[in-house]
Image (tube, helix red, strand yellow):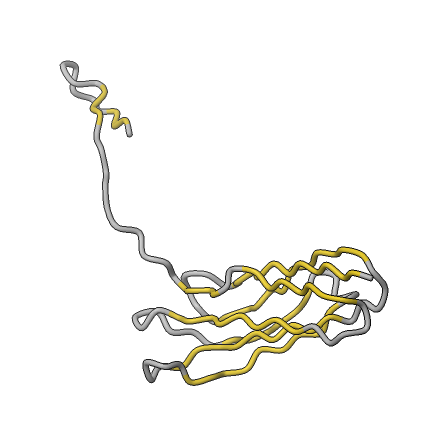
Length: 125
């Protein structure tokens, strides 16, 4: 990083910054994968865990396309006693093929207002 000053002897100073970047939220797994045979029920779940020092509430859930999936987000207790959210995505595509979508979860956090979870579907014969 360069810092510009009005000092004639030190017009430009070089500086380094370092620090630990902690995730705002843990999304596990990072994407919902729906893979299987046509006609079979296919469901994927994704756990969304807020950091203890940055809690939030879900305010809205939408899908970018929504053509081949249904989805819902439920508040759920986690193993460590905290609350988190469980995103459940179900396949609605009945014929073989691939698709991709994006579930967008609106939250009431001042840090970030949206969590995006990619959905990938691969339906086989």
